[in-house]
Length: 209
Image (cartoon, rainbow, N blue to C red):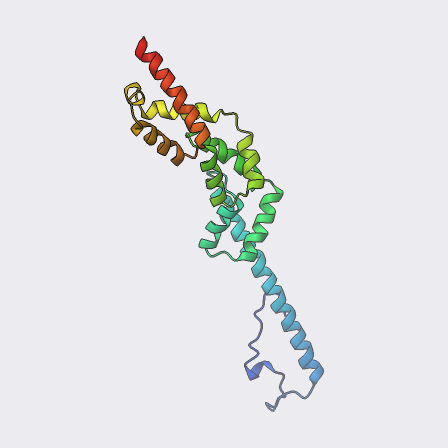
């Protein structure tokens, strides 16, 4: 019996040993030997299936990682949607981490820099990282290592959205609009106030020229 042969159906009486007269074998040792061999074949078949599933999950993960980096949580969600088993996913992840294709610390740094360049503040970046399974142990240093002055970045956003005339209008209308915008972008109230104060000074200087 070769390893690739399909195990006999144990529910079929024909698989049991029989005499030439059609009666069942009375040799228990022969039956035990057949049972052991079938168990070995079944175990080997299960191992091959697990290995195949792990390889399929790894291949799918590589395809997803090709365009851009993913966090572990983000990649797991996508593989689960593709109905890969948890065991296959964990096996694939172990291999991906060994070759540094999957690295949450690197992902946090790249994602934080990307969001900062798009004009988002630290609180928004941290929240987005949390959605992707990145905890504060990785998100905090990733944000802290960014080369940025948050109030200056907030001021740049103000100048993009509001002209000098709007910034110099009396009353609290403009202040409230600026505050809402910067809050939605994830800036702290302190950075927002400093940014607005500086933006108004710049607007005053422009109006006097």
